[in-house]
Image (cartoon, rainbow, N blue to C red; front, top):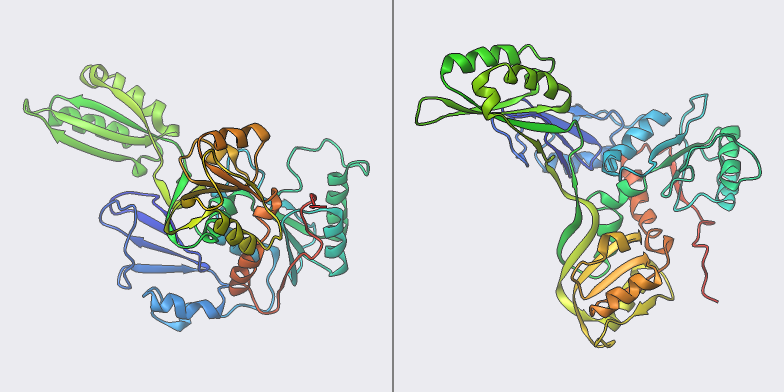
Length: 422
């Protein structure tokens, strides 16, 4: 479940669910997590919600009447499918450096009938997509990452872009939004080790304008009322948060929170008042965390296992005959693993320095492995894309549950890690 706190006391509170719908309702106080109430919800539903999801929503007390949600339509366009994809994993969860979302958009809209899921978009996968008359390729890794100044046949990624454009095939990439989202790639990886208490290594925070806290003193109610009237004239002031506490001398200690766009205007008003100006303190407000979302995971296993068992579990979970293992100093194959840190792909930047018995990721450099081993941490490496590819089957099921039955969702048979054990 995604939870986004957009407003404060009495204002619109918005939650986005992994069930293909969104819910908006009024709250009386600011809450990081709100309880759903059939009496206070007003549903803003997705017109393409699969009928199979309705019983689950109803059992949760969200839907009161079946007629609230129309059945999926026979035809879905690209816009409708993109809405579903972004509900399953909001793009706002992606890392700032990443290139996620719709990368290629056909000039002529057409119904989406076939979607191909792949970890990497290669020439072989593009051939596969063309052969099956694919309308949309969902490529976990973005095939278009750095800006192009030209589209020429001498570069393989530029060739892929040209073929997609010529064939009217849309390309969408979720990448680190899938890693970050609760129930995404990293949760899937750590789930292969069995049940445990799972936490996020690098916490994701709510997106939106940066906010600032302005603390200042008003000597009496008249001064506070005067400043309040001026601040109300600032554009967007209806979204400000303000509180005041009376001090022993009868003055008011005021706490005002506004976004960056309104900061200059608010400061100009306050510095014109000698009491407010002399006591003014400005701090940056951290965005609220999105619980369960972020990069990397740490699991404290309910049932510790040996290093040897951990290797076998991950072979089975990832569907691989071989893994690379580096034993931590003073560790053996029989040593117990109680804590596991994981990160999909190239995860050293996320898991390095985390205290754990075992690291699981796709790839780490030679020196990064040596550093982990020196601290007594064992390391399992699967190669980059092998740590991610198995999640496609999980996502296919989720996507099918949200789409019309007329849409075929397939997993590429040509997609594979370029490195093979020989």
